[in-house]
Image (cartoon, rainbow, N blue to C red):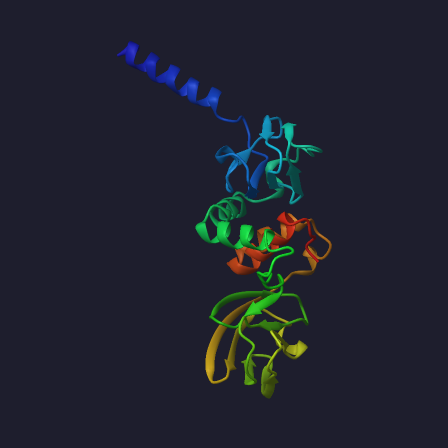
Amino acid sequence: MRQIALCLGLGLLAILTLAPAHADYVVIAASDAPDAYAAGTEIADDQQIDLPQGARLTLIERSGRIVTIDGAFSGSVPGSAQVGPSETSSTNWDILKRLVGSAEASSTVLGAARAGAGDIPPPPDVWDLGADSSGPRCVRKGELTLWRKQADETLQVSARSAAGRHEGLAWTAGDHRLALPADMAVEDGRMVVSVGGELRDFELSVMPDTLAGAPAGQLLSWLSERDCRRQALALIARLHGGGTAD
């Protein structure tokens, strides 16, 4: 019995020795990088990273700082702030890992990052609300813009929420975006939109003032927590492509 306990103890020690002592970063996007750095992978601040020429990693630190590493590279994460785990809740950390590890994330992020000079249209802006489906949507206070992929016809739009009702809005052919009145984006709650007679039911979350000027990773964490998945993926694509949150 003592021998079995000893073996179990040695096995656990081996696992703990092989596993990172702490995970200060999560890979949120990877291009042409080894499988060991796939999106959703946790990385310690002192962990050795080896990237070939042309590879790129985008990481989020627990503080919300975003770090992009381009290959060829060998070393630990540059400029590590060594911020404690209390600054990003474990719940948000887990939500982010599930989001960025999905097939949807890989398709959206890498497709956008490679669109650059090609003829593939870029994804919607982070704050564009996709009008092709219902679901959670995140907005900045006083800013609410619908987005559509197909813009070949003029459609009539109406919107209704606790803030009021607006009718007779024309979404002109050729325009992919339509700005709705600012009073529709002042508080959390349900908003129903009719686009050419098709209803969309949105659950709006208004960005808190505390996120104004915050690190991009904190905004990403909030978008993920509020289940604004497509907007979170649009932000990741922008950051991975070298852009900023604004």
